[in-house]
Length: 189
Image (cartoon, rainbow, N blue to C red; front, side, top):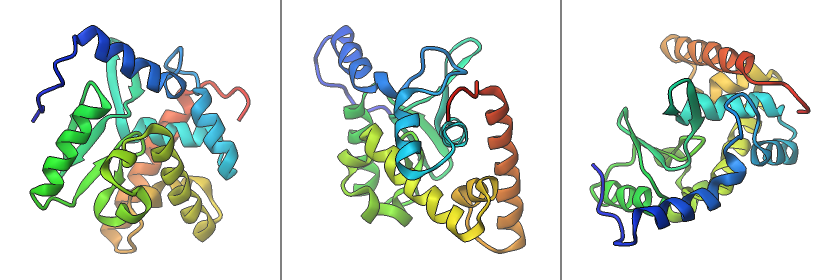
C-alpha cells in the first residue's frame, strides 16, 4: 500500500527527505552516523550495538551492497513497507491505525505501536527519526537494566517474553545484531 504523495515534484520531495535524515544516514554503510552516536551517548548505550539494532530492525538495500536503516519504514503484521518520505509513511500509518491495526512497527527502531503508543506520542512524532531513536534507546536501556548484558538486552528489545519460543526468537535476534555489529566500523562509541 503506497498512499498518494503530495503533488510536489519528486526531486523536491527527495531533497526535503534527504535534508531531514542526513544525520541518521551514514556516508558509508559501515560507519555509525552522528545521530546514532549522539543518542547512544545520551543513554549510555554502546553506539555500535545501537546502530546494529537499527540496521537489524529497518535496514533497506538502497543500492547493491549497501543497506541502511530507513526512517520511514513500517512493519504491519509481518509485512515490511518502505516509504519515500515521512509524509507518505505517516499517511499509511494513519490509515492502518484507522483500520484498527495496532501491530505496527514504526521507524528506524521499528517500535511497536501496540506496546509503546504512549512513548511514541502521535503517529507523526513516531516517525521523527530522532524521537524514534530516543524511544528505541529508552526501551533498549530498560532491557539492559533487567539483564545487565547489552546483547541480551538487544534480544529482549526484539522479544521480551519469557516463554521458550520467545526466548529462542530473542536468541536468534541477538545473533543477527552481533553479525551486524561485526560489519560496522568501531570507531569511537
